Amino acid sequence: MQISSHFDSGNIEVIDASNPHRVLLAMRPDLKSHHFQWFHFKVDGLTAGQRYGFSLTNAGQSAYSHAWTGYNAAASYDQSNWFRVPSRFEDGALNFELDASASQVWFAYFEPYSRARHDWLIDQALSKADAELFAIGKSIEGRDIQLLRISRTPDAQRKVWIIAQQHPGEHMAEWFMEGLIERLQRRDDVELNTLLASADLYLVPNMNPDGAYRGHLRTNAAGKDLNRAWQSASETESPEVFFVQQQMRRVGVDLFLDIHGDEEIPYVFTAGCEGNPGYSPRLEQLEEEFRSRLVGIGAEFQTAFGYPRDEPGQANTTLACNAVGMEFDCLSFTIEMPFKDHDDT
Image: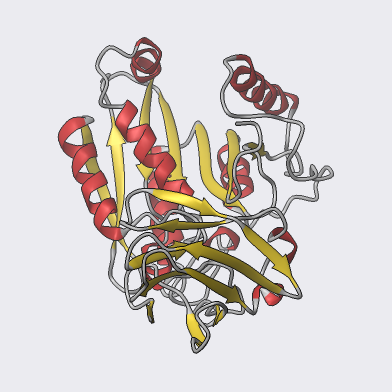
């Protein structure tokens, strides 16, 4: 048996692979950070028909150790079709077994969104969704951060911003962006065309390419949590946020959605700006309308489960949602999707 993680978004350390029924592994912390929870590794040399067992021994020390209960690992034999593997969190370790049906398998915390697929997605947006490459920023390690604009009406007044994967381990965020860009390719979508008659879209499909490539959970290559950098962004330690803020101030923001994944809650939900200084009845009404419309159309969204709401004036304004909502006095949400299976479906 050979276990490897030296590839895009790979993360694992082998402690002891002598017993194929209980291979002992550990998740590697983010560079210059104590955070860890993301894992992604490949196992070669399996014998079809045999059972293998794996134990992530440091799961109990991870960033969100309470979230392993009810979680099942993701696996794939071809890196295209992924399925869940029944998993158990016990004695501080995440344990799972697999009855192998091929000689190699990949395991991951969630279905990864690779950099190669990201490059394909940008090409799809430019060639099939009428997107333009509005601006390009650079990560610490020199990877492109593409800002796409979809503008189909010259006199559109509204500016809608959607960014994804500030936290690099939250790969569902770029899968969300792929779904959005796929929908933008439809020419007969009445609802979408109505939106684009009055609004331009500004999309950043991946805010943290370095962290995603390195197999990080929360941080960029400088060990910075980008979603805690919106009051102190710098060109040296958080150039990803610095770039997006510059572009926002250049064109303005009327609606901001920051796409994330949540480790613990098995539902789709939003977090708003109710704790911001200057939060007004107008913003409260906009937030309520946004949520109620999603519920009303039967979207995979609900309002019963989510984060506790901030008290007035007690918001953490270093978060993107709160910082953008406050600076531009606009409707601003964090959209959270689960690492676990979605309980409603």
